[in-house]
Length: 345
Image (cartoon, rainbow, N blue to C red; front, side, top):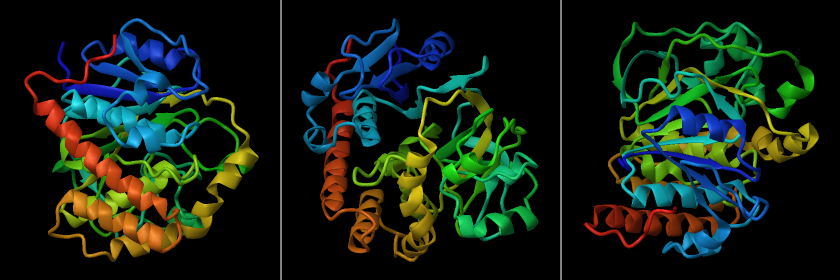
């Protein structure tokens, strides 16, 4: 079986409709589910590989010993596992995003899309919907401005995007402020939009394609809250990607979300660090001298800035460096004629 295409999912639940649909619709993909302490120990579904906590402990990655339990960042171990087994494209999602019949759709780093021609914070949802809506992680202080200001788009042209965020219909990824004050399903239009240097928008880990040029930026910070770890990762990834001349795509919905139970007030509390700091974080990261250095040095510089500024705990820099060492090990493993890291049955 081809090990080039991988889907990585985290869950604490028995196999969900998402898992069943992925197994049905994506036979050419390796589907990997990363467990945590709350995941049923007998988790199993045909055609899906399950990485249990016990198996995670045996992985030859230093991050396996240092990653906190009951934290979304254990997904990092799934990324490393997939890369060690030769992943050439990685698709991440969650267990409450249900694929449409055509999922995942066109999978290529090159897409034909319009490009945002304005600088600064971009509310990409407004290009897919006329509703008053914004993505989780978008600065609240810019929401009103983003909804009343026209944003020019280029004519469509072919662009290479090493990170591609697909949207989700029905109950899309929004923050607790939106959910506490707004009701109703959302269904997005389908035209793709691309951001480049000077434009920023948070993206999540719920339905995102990654190509090898961006694998270094997959790292989810372990000391960020559950609701901020993927958002702050997205800021780091954009700062690094754009400094290297890369581009970020936002693509039409190929899933719809039937959200797992959440306390919206707890979500709000988890998001406060973002409400207070997202603008400052992106400003500091975008000012770092990241051009002309390799991705590992870029990531190191970003997490040095994030920890020095107090947004993340001091040990986060050590964890990011463990990620970089483990990533190098995983890449060497992938090139081995006889990998020592077995595929999980």
